[in-house]
Amino acid sequence: MTVAVVLLAVAVVTVFALMAAAVAVTLARLEGSTWPSALTRAALTFTTVITLAAAVTAALTPLLT
Image (tube, rainbow, N blue to C red):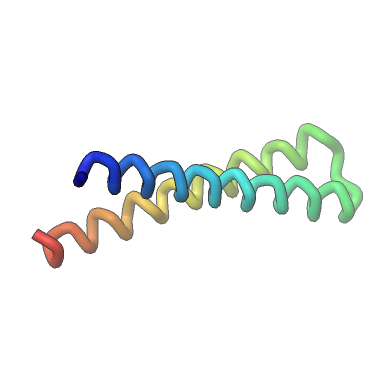
């Protein structure tokens, strides 16, 4: 059961990160950025969301064990 919960949490975080990256690309393109610049913003957004999820997980681990 624990493995299933972990896999589900990873899937949800990944989907959320992809959605945030898609929004970043859309906003960058609406602002008039070029495609390489927009994709750079999307990559940065994706990386930031994944890093934030890892930091929150690391902070909450001592409280849940």
